[in-house]
Length: 139
Ligand code: NI
Image 1 (cartoon, rainbow, N blue to C red):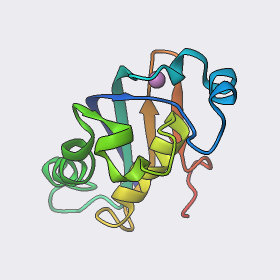
Image 2: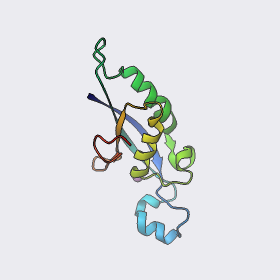
Image 3: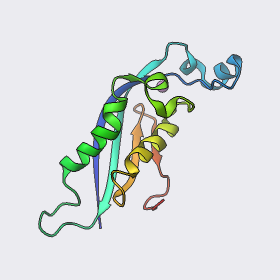
Image 4: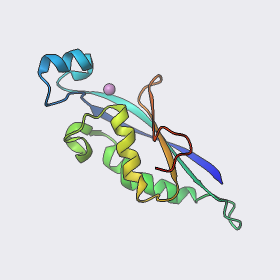
């Protein structure tokens, strides 16, 4: 088995705000991330797949096939969007890095079934979110 990891980027905006909590509590929890009109990030997304090396091609999977799956299921929907309003994943879910890593993994778990190992979302230079959390887990 070999791991293949490939990194993608997208830009998106979000607002960290839980509609079911009072405004004061949102400000206490999320601070300036709760500002009404949102703010943006240049996200990095590393997708890690695993598998045996195909003896003919020498690949775990063709990069084009991985790129298509990530583009169609994540990038086309997330890139240059306001996540809270434009992406159905976050209609009832705060688009934190934690939730985004999980939703992205769920979006890829069907198209990359049996291959996807985990995703790592880079929100800033200092914030990175991995899902699932156990290296090598097969959730
Ligand atoms: Ni943010």
